[in-house]
Length: 507
Image 1 (cartoon, one colour):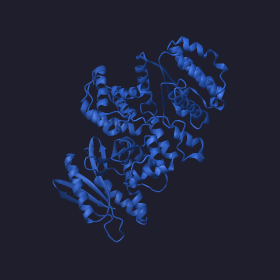
Image 2: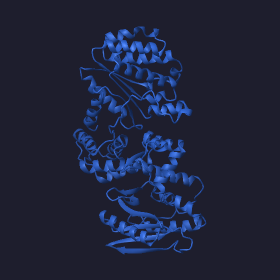
Image 3: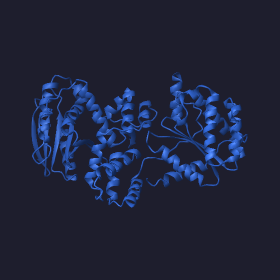
Image 4: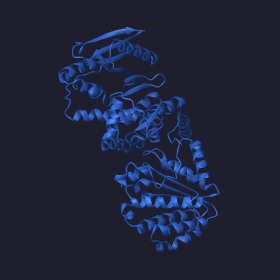
């Protein structure tokens, strides 16, 4: 595990301050882990009594009647108090069957809290299980009322309440009452913002690798692998662990091998992109179930569109909540490179199965005798394909789908051996659309729409500059020239500049 001490210190400060807050993060983003660590830290502090429960245990039927919900809720509390050996407080719950409504529950909880000589902290994980349920919102309203009365000096309340789940309470309310979608008055408006970043930093990934090295006695160049793991995952906790797990359990099968090599990480990425798991299933499900989010992601990935990161926009907010999008320099970006590639593959596959495209090139060999990939041959074949299949298509279709067509075209060629990533140069925001890795060799391809000679020459200069920084001598430029009268479609040339060679092809 990574060293979470800095994150825990920030959360502990919120608890000490008596804050009520919600930890809303995507699935498998470390919520349950951080709650567990927080609980352990609080249990070691004599000033706190921690009631940590999960609503995962409560089924949908239980929410149909107040008395059913209250009975189950108190049963869960009883289990926690029994585990903590809080015999006196446990004895108070024995008459719980007499509690039939939230008003009575309110009174009873006041009695529990007042009977403790410590500050009582309530932690509820998996609050999503209560989605679409008014009773849960009424329960939150009760906690809010207790909080306000305590601040007025009129009663006891939990010192701090922490809810954890993917959806926030406002989202739940919108689901329950569609006619109130634009109303932001929720029963949880007493909560403070939770600003602790649960993504793993370079430092935290390094600490995880250090712990692994000490346990397994494996040699790892920790700074290199920490940086690369962050590069592919943007610190998404599940994805960091997933790549490491693949290296450890699938690629280090020879137990005499005691060192991670750079190609191991490349292999782990390749395996991750072809395997299925609950995280990727959730990613695709969220895109399939939300057409507006799908369209936004398509525009960002395929059309190079940029959108400001404004969480007041319901679609941006949805993408943030599900972990599909993140903020980068005020813009909405796909959260991480693994997600971006997985979405690439998913959208390209949908185009294949839609019947919009028909490929006849898969039987052609693009592999040289030395095992390298003949990208020039593939690009020239793509030119032929586009001329035959799409010469009659309108400009808007090609501008929207050109990149996706190329990705769908290239996938069968590299499938199972290579993978491709859309590259972004953070320092200068110079974009290179695709970097294909095949058998540990990189092929850098820039896809551009023709927007004039000046723009073209600037693109060549940027590509040469990037090739030089990547220690690559050869690059590829794919130009979608949508001018009917240009006559350049299907042509190609080799451009030598700054000690590099660029194969430029017009579509």
